[in-house]
Image (cartoon, rainbow over all chains, first blue to last red; front, side, top):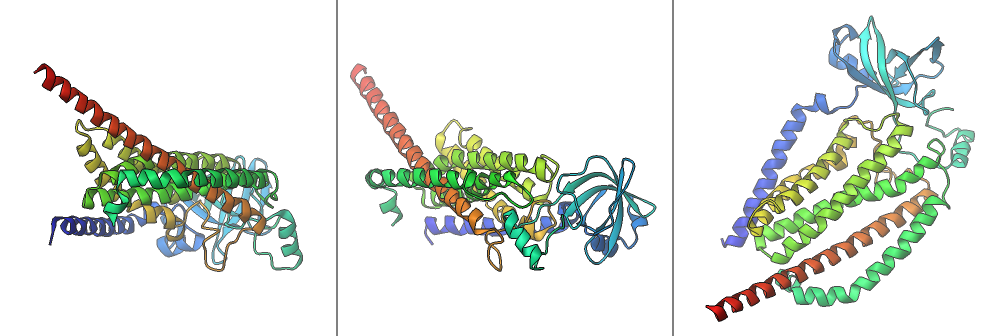
Length: 147
Length: 246
């Protein structure tokens, strides 16, 4: 084997080895890489919300007609259409916050209530002009958030 | 075949002819892309005018990734076949790729504040994009960090190839893990989930920035070739000087 092909061979081996090593590291660190858990993930992983002591993030949709204002506090439910979590939040909400909107809340559990310190809107991958969105709603094929 | 491509004179001759065409395509697509993007495309139903940031953000992100891939492949050619032109190409790509990764991070941040409610989060997509920028920086710094240019080129090329591992992470992070960043809209199963009127400026801008990069890379390589020639001439004249006096 001449020097050129030996170098090529070594390069390919290095890339494959590093790739495998990276994959293993990423698998081991999966819990740290996921940015949020859905309510269903939480139950599957921790069983009960009482077992969660640390700060975590929950992501999902704002459940329809679950938003309540109590003074400065906003109380609402996050759902992944399987399980729900009750969230209490004091502070400014993002502009996109409304029923059916995907959001991520960061905070801690206190007696089954999730006390959020920050609420972020999660934008989906659909881009369309308002007229198209209206038409979809009119024809009942709308899948996104309600206004 | 690589010897054929890596001949500097032939490179100069070929690029001399295609450079004006590339510049022409860049200008046409950039002007039409910006016109459609900024004036003649609809607002988004929920983002409003902020959707226009996408026409710079998405092409920049694609190019930052694609240019990194080209950089790393060129580094493989340099390490395996030892073509000096391959090293010139890699070091010509690096600053442009770094520019696009900064542009991606900055425009993304500007969009994130009004839409998500935050400038920055440490989710997988944003973090891996930042890592990509650091690989560009590392490549540039390392290739200039050695007394002998060739040592720098070799070490930096190894780093660039290692960084290749990060590319699939950047691309697929939004599918593999829950991230705040939205998943892909254009290349996805079931066709793009983006309105045609918005897709047009986006594609025009992707062409514009691609041809702009190509033009800049050719320009960089040519400059570096001239630099090398100057160095060689200088060395030659110095040697002659020495042989005369000695």
